[in-house]
Length: 333
Image (cartoon, rainbow, N blue to C red; front, side):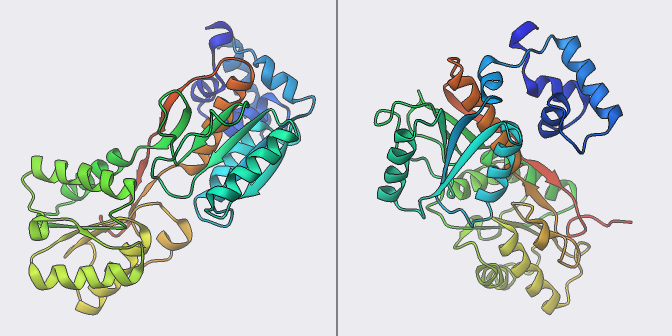
């Protein structure tokens, strides 16, 4: 494969994460000798050669990360993934918080460009498409989670429609015969696309949708409780709940416990985001969809390095989500 071999390909061949592959090839700590040998062997077999941009960064490059909400649940893991990919100590990271304000975001961008950063990751906290900034700033930009509306920009997105599909497929496989879909904010792209994917699967499987509609509201436990009660009143035979996030799902689980319904034998519940502190704390544990936020950060960093090295990869790059099964949908032993 020569120099076209990517670090992602090396990681896959060695059976490790992108972060572990980067650590192994850069002689960073917390990687076992056996893992390091496996990664090095895979790199040699594939002909992997670090890009010039990555090599130059080891000598002290600087990149900026502008987040819409630095304290948010989405921003932190994405930034951690990006930091792993850039390499500890190899790159100086300048992090800015726009606090969801467009004017503040552009102010930070100008400040970073004036400091002559090599590139910038623009990190969104909401999945909706955003306006492009590329024509305003002459520096490589990568948009993470909230993709740019301009097809010529480089964006890294989550597979929202697929998330809804695999959630619905799992509920059907787990035995659900009447499913209620409780979505979050109907103005958020992720909510719309996940719901559409779920509806397609349920329709193809001939599984009725409670109320023949998606119940859309907000991303909160309160909404989960209200929607679950409304669904049970409308269709007492509902036996599957597909929820827009883990908070909604926890609200549903509370209502089912109050009703004396056994989960998962009487009803199955699936969430989204795989927020570990919540999904593993529920009783039973919550089955959820993991968006691999750290991988979104790692891919964004890798694409930014390519762009800095003069080999941009425009378009929308998708990180596939994954089902994480726990006790809320299937009996665990």
